[in-house]
Length: 132
Image (cartoon, rainbow, N blue to C red):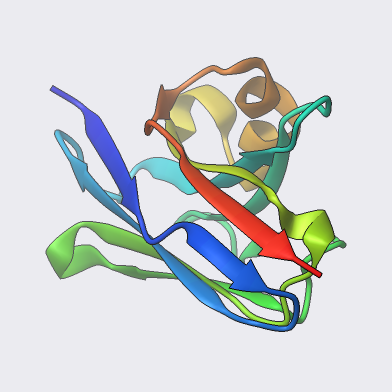
């Protein structure tokens, strides 16, 4: 059974930092595009960051470049998202998600294709609230 379980969300003041974690089971990172999406109230789901073995560098949305860092501990089957210099615009539910590379080919295929439509495997979400 495929499972993705996020943790680490919470409330933080603007300018603060948070680390999200996602423990996965039922599959290994190899062969998957895996990353983070977020959805703010009244807005569409957007891809925040993604990694895969076929992408030479991680994908980051323009709005988070230089502030967010994605990383993984393959031995622990855990994906991380370190978020620095958070602002109120980062307030959203953050989801860990993965899809097979045989389906999406790369992070771009996941972030701009099936991901926003909910394809793939998803965690339950972690609320991040940034107050000004």
